[in-house]
Amino acid sequence: MMRRRFTAAAVVLAAALAVGAPRGMAAPDPAAFISTLGSQAIQVLGPSVPPQQRLARFRQLFHDDFDVPNIGRFVLGRYWRIASPQEQQEFLRLFQEYIVQAYSARLGEYGGEPFKVTGTRDSDGETVVTSEIIRQDGNPVMVDWYLIDRGGSLKITDVYVGGISMKVTERDEFAAVIQRNGGQVEALLEQLRRKVGAAGD
Amino acid sequence: MHLRPSALTRPGRLLSVIGLGLVVLGSPIPGLAQAQQSGPAGSDAAEAADAHLAATADENFNDPFENTNRKIFDFNQDVDRIILVPVAKGYRAVLPAPVRDSLHDFLRNLDEPIIFANDVLQARPDLASKTFARFMINTTIGIGGLFDVATHLKVPFHDNDLGITFAVWGIRSGPYIILPILGPSTVRDAIGQGADNFGDPGNIIASNYNVLWATFARAGVDGIDTRSRNIESLADIERTSLDYYATIRSLYRQRRAAEIRHEPTSVPNLSPVGGGGTASPPPPISYTVAPGHPPAEAPYK
Image (cartoon, rainbow over all chains, first blue to last red; front, side, top):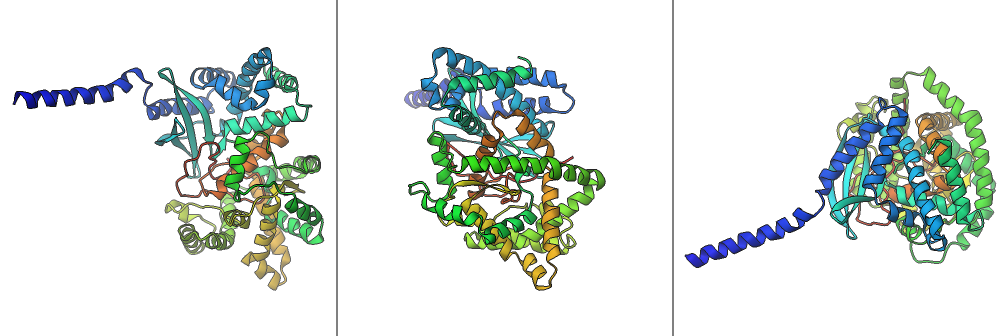
């Protein structure tokens, strides 16, 4: 009797540890994280939010919740390795602002539409949270969020909207710019400076 | 993240008819032959493989004719700016939204038979039965296709075309090409598009009854309809891009990869080749590039 009770307690304890340990330390539930973030983002994109405020909010969101250094490295591709440390730093700064400006405009059309998380799956050590935005014409737009756990907080590593990867799109574009300018990373930086500067930094 | 390239290139089937004409005239043919020979060595067949390659190997743009493509791209943008966009805006200004939506649904219903044929060629009874059901429902209850009743009955539109069929059969895309007026494509997709138009029951009937103008009218209205739904989204992409050509090329490739996997997408039509819509089956799990399927519905206001 005693022994059985002890066993039961051990099982419960073990279960608590197994479940509790990861939960305690670890990042919030990915689905809940995206549910909150996605709803906020879509709200910010809504027509009632003034452009300046939208940009500021987007900037903060991207800075806080995206895995910027790693996205930047991926996006620069093989040119990351040939860039000097100064160029790398400047690139990360410019690239962030560029993404914020470009995507707050490009995603504007989804502003204010209903958003819901539809599921999660694993992919290569990352968690993918699938979600959809319901368009006015009744057709859903699938949005997949790739998340990685960085020291207890979740960071977004990529977003697919309707099957299009933000990371891949930007890598392709940046590589084209560098290629067409004799392989010079500086040429990309110059174009980014001009683009970003135009809207004020 | 998304993007909406749809309009740029999908001036529609009319254009595709013109494209077919070009193919017949032989202009693209030398390029085609050459392109096929010079296809990249590799074993991959379908676009999914292409996309994976592209995503993992840097700069595999598969664009050997880039200089020529860029010239045609610039020309297309001029045509777009001077003719297509003003016409599309006028169209939007003159006709009320419900009328435009009905016209849109009607044109899309005309595409269902060829979509059905491709569903079958791809051995996809799941898709084929949906297309069949949509066509029957919309043609009858939807009054000749003027109303997309099927979508309300939870049988949403999905697109399909011969370029996708070729990809499913394992044929590689061949080089990326920009077609005059029609926009982004690949050798495989352009051939598929021409053949789709050639085999389209509506077009065949029109030609049998000597009403070729009907085919052109359909293509023209289709192009205007598509463009009218993408004015803002494409303008946003162009304005925010460093290199619009490169961005469109990336979007086209990702969008096609998603279409080939029959994932629901939302990317606007970048190309004349794809229609828009949403497909169904669950996406396979593949990280590098897991594009979805682009529905072409662009936002329209």
